[in-house]
Structures are given as C-alpha cells and as structure tokens.
Length: 149
Image 1: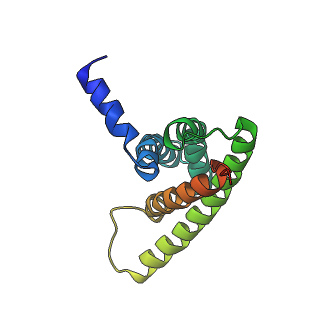
Image 2: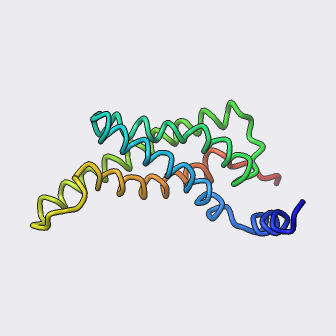
C-alpha cells in the first residue's frame, strides 16, 4: 500500500459523517445532475421525469456507499433499503416541489434575464435542499442503530 493511500484512509477515518456524506453526495450529484440535464435538454423530457430519473440513478450507489462508508451501519439491508426508499421519495417530492415554487416566484418577481431556465434553476435549488433533507433522513432514520442502554 502506498503512502498516499494510507494517508487518505487515515484522513477518511477521522472525517465526520456529514463530510463523508458530502463526498458520496458529490459523486451522486455529478451523476444525477448530468442525467437530469441530459434528459431535460437533450431528450427534452419533462422536469419531473428528468429529476426522477436523475435522482433514481444515484440512489442505489448512495445507499450502498452511505451504508458502508458514511454511517458504517449494520442495519439489515431490507430494513435499511425500505427506509431509504421512503426517505428518498419524501425528500425528492418535498425538495423539488419547494424549489419549483421558489424558482417560479423568483423569476416572476425578477426583471433579470437569467442564464438558467426556470426548470434548470429549480433543479439546482432542489438538489441543494434534497441533499440536506436526505442527510438528516439517512442519519436519523435509515441508518440509525439502536443504542444499547
């Protein structure tokens, strides 16, 4: 094992769960946003279909990496997976509904000609909100292990 590999492993062991979640999230976000924008702009699919496909794409990788790497959870796969799906669905609809409303309101009230379309702005805002809500749901609901009393 090289010095760089050992050093990286040492740093990651000392990293808190939110930082690890963000590292996993960078991978998921890049993948998800790439797919969302491809679906929206190249395939010309709707906002909801594009965001659903983009988020679903990263869900499996997110579950596996966050279970093992971020939270070192021993929660059984079936229990964790069902909770994970529930959290993903709730976060998805909550975050992207709020962001759609906020971006519509922002663009209507603004005389500014944006570089982004209303749907693109909604996707970016929704992704930020989704990340925060998803972290909280995974940490406190999906991968939380009962503490021995």
